[in-house]
Amino acid sequence: MRELYINSSFGWNPPEKKSELFHKLSRFILVRPNTGGPAIAFAMFRFEHEDGEDVIYCYDIQVSSAAQGAGLGTHILEHLIGIGFKWNMQQLMLTVFKDNKQAIKLYNSLGFIIHPSSPGNFPEGEDTDYEIMSKTLLEQTN
Image (cartoon, rainbow, N blue to C red; front, side, top):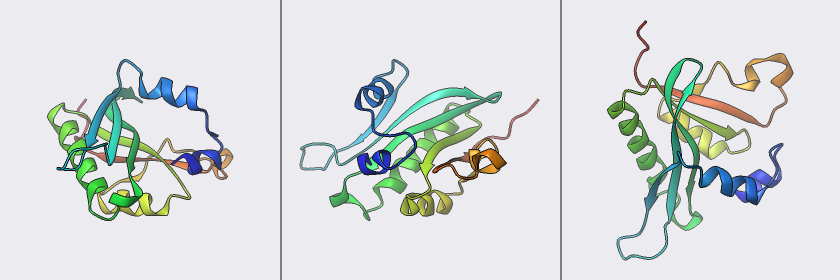
């Protein structure tokens, strides 16, 4: 992921990333091998209020290169969807770099779409290097 950030409009800023990760509202899903050892995948998320909706926002999801292709990303996202349902969140949202084709394919396969607030939906945002994607969990009732 570091390489994706380095080549993006966000840039790589370790203090900023650390601040985001250790925000008091951040929550984590960690995946460790059955044999113990360091995490091989994780997700960092928060419960947020975006555009009048309660959402679960996935700020980061990463699977180590050695563990990719084993379905861990799918499993983590399905777990996040379950958390969203349990806490009556209207959507699961995330930001993805347009160059991360593998992630976009995964998100699409799970029913994510480009969110209406994504910068690519606006003329001034056509050239951005990221999209905001979302999956509806519960329809908002007024």
